[in-house]
Each structure stands twice: as structure tokens, then as C-alpha cells.
Length: 124
Image (cartoon, rainbow, N blue to C red):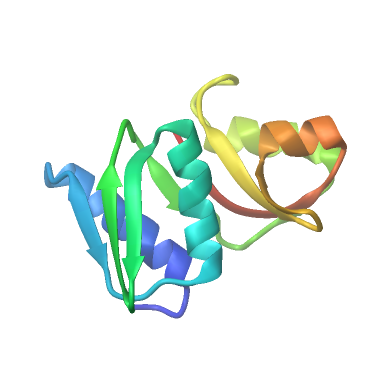
């Protein structure tokens, strides 16, 4: 177990998906992880998540792949396309999650608002 809570949770989600499970229980969570899961729920990659105390339960949805991005590259608006090509299988499939000065958002919204930020994770 590492110090990166987001990376640990996304790895546990992928391990559960590979094992054929539909639900994951994560022992540690943070506000950043909950924000990432909220974006994933809006896009349909997870069905639901529930935090009670220190435990977090995640129900997987139509998720094919998810992972955190290490090191967390800082990107400008015109560099977002380069990382889309690197991490996503096709242009309109999946999302990159960026941490910006206006909060967490997908790469689509960051590009529309002309905001750069720090890459956190990708999902498709």
C-alpha cells in the first residue's frame, strides 16, 4: 500500500474488474478520490459509491480501464491533446481528469474553458 490514495483505489477497481467482481471495498479515501469518483459516476464508469466512516464501497459500471497518471504532469491547454493521444485509445473514447484552479474536471471541459492543470487519472 502506497501513500497515493487515488492510485491505490483505481488499482483496486481494476483488480476487481479483472476478477469479475462488481463491487470494491476501499479502506482509505480522501476528498480528491471522492471527486474523481463523482466524475466517473457522471460519465457512467461506476454505478455508485458510498463512504461511511473510513470505508468506501464502489459499484463498478461500464469501466474498461482506469489508472492514475504518475508523475502528475502539469499541462497547458494546447498540450492536452498530446496526453489524450498518449493515454486514451481513441479521440472520443474516455476522459482525462485534470486538477485545475477551478477544481477537478475532464479534459473536455478544461479545453472549452481554456484552463490547464495537473493530470490526475484517465478512464475509458
